Length: 231
Image (cartoon, rainbow, N blue to C red; front, side):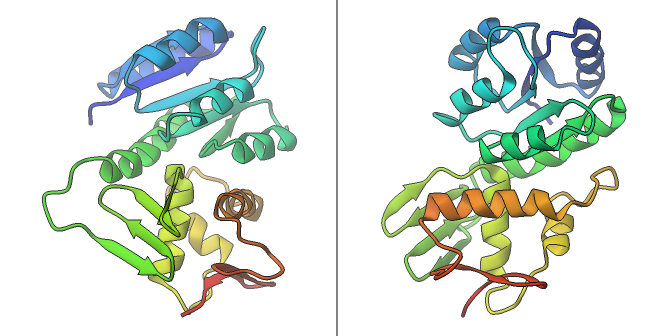
């Protein structure tokens, strides 16, 4: 799988180690120890993914993630301090697709990278077959091209947000638990189960769709059970 991956971490040993493992998987790696160096790469290089440390001198990983999401939808994985739950929530809210806490096992990170890239590259590769399109009210999802249109307005969704919406649309009329969403999206043994992860992505998705919890037009919360899109 060919992919260009950006790594930004001021802890050089960690950045160098991640680089070695990703290059062993035949990925092309762009490695930087500071945010300012990385910003130019983001603007000039066609990237497939970014791996960002939260704590960086001068500009945080959150700031870089925010900059990326202004233009791009490729996956972003945040590296956070151990037990820093607020970092995870903040990163997901800003559009990150995944997070991993330090210290981490390099093979775990590689597994996360592969899972994110599979979805992203699949959705953004021109389809050889007829487009697979889901239409629900004013919502149109093209699974092959990873395009989402709501009331004739394009929505810029991250791969994780798109996956959640796709699953709920494909199972419309049925309740899908947070755990089921989690398993179907990530589906790897390394990912720790956390309902909060899905909750944050759902909240971000609702904001982009101007959908409310109290009077939802699309995503309905079934308290204690999960989420559904009505028939």
